[in-house]
Amino acid sequence: MGKLRKWVISAIVFILIGIILFLNISDILRRKSGGETDMIHSFYEIERDTIDVLCLGSSQGYSAIQPNIL
Image 1 (cartoon, one colour):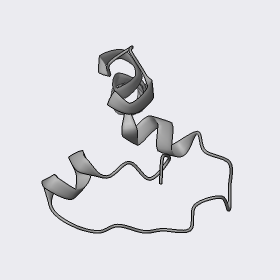
Image 2 (cartoon, one colour):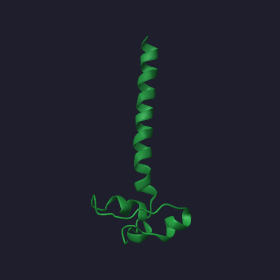
Image 3 (cartoon, helix red, strand yellow):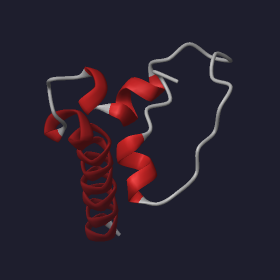
């Protein structure tokens, strides 16, 4: 039983560390210039209930339309 308990605790710690790293990897690897070049993160920093337009489309729509400027 002791060996199984140690294995389960090790697996839980490993998974928790993986989740923490996965959640923070975006902040570590994203561009630090901010503003218009970082549209996804700047989108989530906009105040709630201030956006009136939803634009759906392909990568051209993603790279050409900036909802925080519209």
